[in-house]
Image (cartoon, rainbow, N blue to C red):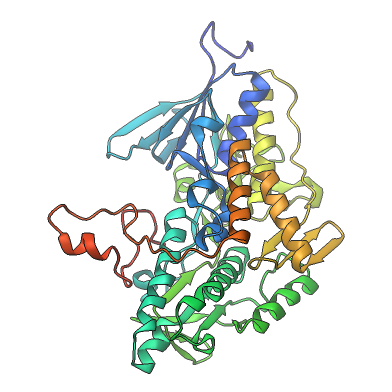
Length: 455
């Protein structure tokens, strides 16, 4: 036991956030200290969401439960508290936690790791919050798949041409990985299942990607980004660069170019903003993010470390430039934070965070994708296999890897499933026979209490 512990009492470590940053930091800390800490991890859900596989969960290639890893299984020696930390008192060393039933708890800590993640980067566009759905949560992805299938069901029997156009126009905002992959995977899914809807012509489908930047996928090289753009265009997907949405009025969307779209589907994937929790720390922020030093310690807050979307983390491997808010960087930062916190307790030596960018991968549906692995650039099927292999290796726990691999195999061998499970998680009242029979309303918006709204 470390000399930092008082007598037989273990040092209290609280980890805020159960995503890539929090979960991996906690696991690394427990491994390095061999469990010689009293570790509590607070997470809004009782699982780690493996976000890179969300698009494939949305299109049905993977069972949604298989893209989550229960924290109690991943961290068997930690105390898991399901709740939300809405305030941190650095001086009193206390974290204020709101539990799912509304009860509040106060956790005391000797060391604090902040990894609350981010929230959708919402731009004040009139009508946006009333219509748009995000792509960050499992609930949103399940809803999107059900929504798209529901619209196909409606369009199959809709005689009015204008109404059919609304039903079969799908608008995605944001040309980063989340927006491009979600759009591409859902478009590929619809292409596979369209044979079950003989009254819908493929030419009626209008998939639109709106992005304010000069080009999509700014994290990739120009060559690979252009390849993706060309592939999307070849599939009939419109890519509107240097374009924004200015107003949302019901199903009508007004673009900055003057074009007006009629659509029942508006997906918001325009970046991530830091968690509001960082504003309670009482430390100066850099572009709303918590500034940390090269060892990821929060400046002006002793015994506090921060990482991921909420932190401005300098990367020594790239001249001290702040890391982008990606899962890859959060995972690498988490391992360094876990080791550095352990070093503060006498286990090992703290080191500077240094992570050479090892590249990026993106899937565009079955058999297509891009991969940038150092100097190596891959396209098409080879890149798709590389992306799946990379994700499979990065997925925590052997059991989850097996489940996902079986899902992928099943997807390739069996016909696509068009089952619509719109009421999943929202059972009707016992006396509501009509709702129990229909199962789903195509135009239902994401449930406001399910964490699926972008607000």
